[in-house]
Length: 286
Ligand code: BMX
Ligand code: ZN
Image (cartoon, rainbow, N blue to C red; front, side):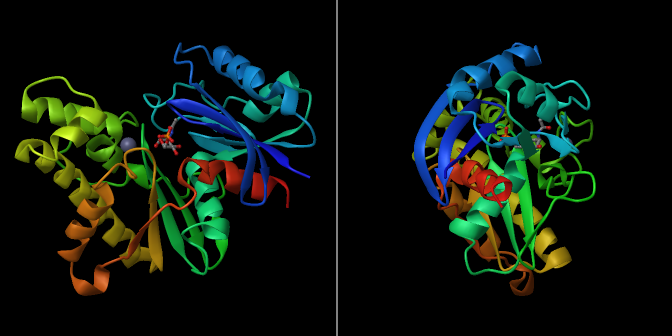
């Protein structure tokens, strides 16, 4: 039968009944950003409490290690260090919960049922509140012994770049995530604007377009580095910013300027915002 899956991100919480690659039912609410994790647990229970049967599969932003959740960048979601999220949510829902990182789950979803089908090794990259990543290497999801594998948003993109919420300077997440684009856009255009504003402005305004191109260049550069380290078959790009109009084409253009042997083909996530739900359900039900 179907599996109940939850995707907890920095901006939204989605819940679904998932059967293979099919989403039978789906619900979504904004993530409560009160700083009190109890509000997040209550929101999940409100969203999916009546669907809790069997094992509930949770894909969540942050590092997941042995059922415990830790923020790498507390600015994307502030969670207490080592929060026993499987136990806490399991107690709320009255069923066992299996948790894993959101981008790792989405990588598996795209590999099994989406744009990564038929490849052997791929990187999934989500550009959103943060920049998340997941690696499938030779057909196996790489989580690492402590859950860190795939956190490519925290690879150095610009040594002179801004401070990342993780505590280091110049991470890809600090230069190319949604909030990073808003900051860079505000600086360059001299007015506060949302990501949507920036993408709209980029169709006519060269300054706005340059902000997006700089971010795309940073992403392409990190993709080349990962390709050099791992030799990947492709990168699959997702996330609300990653899939925003024209952004993939900008990454493609930047990639075309890289040395030929380091170029990595990129594809749009085919499961869109459902990749994490599909991937985590697949892993929890097998
Ligand atoms: C951050 C980190 C990753 C996550 C990524 C994308 C936290 C809380 N999260 O780098 O674990 O995969 O953001 O998160 O440290 P999203 O909320 O943008 O999907
Ligand atoms: Zn960082």
